[in-house]
Image (cartoon, one colour):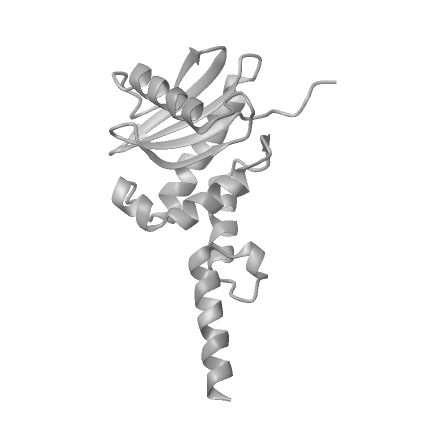
Amino acid sequence: MEACPSVKNILLLDSEGKRVAIKYYSDDWPTNSSKEAFEKSVFSKTQKTNARTEAEIAMFENNIVVYKFVQDLHFFVTGGEDENELILATVLQGFFDAVGLLLRGNVEKREALENLDLILLCLDEIVDGGIVLETDANVIAGKVATHSVDSGAPLSEQTISQALATAREHLARSLLR
């Protein structure tokens, strides 16, 4: 019996190789400096390629990296050397399309930073602990959208901005009593 498909990390970098949103699911990079070194080397190896229309696949440091670029954002999904490239490509496409839906087609760094909470929720909906949960962009975007509207959710399931808005509401109600 084969193990579940797994992902080592999902990276969203800008056109200079700086972090926009990242999530690591593997202990292959134990320190922050090793993570940054990996990101920098993957970025420098892939920046000269033309991965704007279709995802590209590269073998890098005994890992399979699937990547795609749009505007000034670079999307990367990394898996082990024995991982199925098609599954990694499907995860990448799901993430890419979900971000496109959540940002209403305006996929660029500024818009991504303004909606960083949605992108991080998107990462949580796609992969949990390295195990692929969902790859359908419509389902991912739908779950993220319901999270971002649900103020009745427990604080542990809200984004920081939602938690602050909820706290502000509770404070205003207690002051008006």
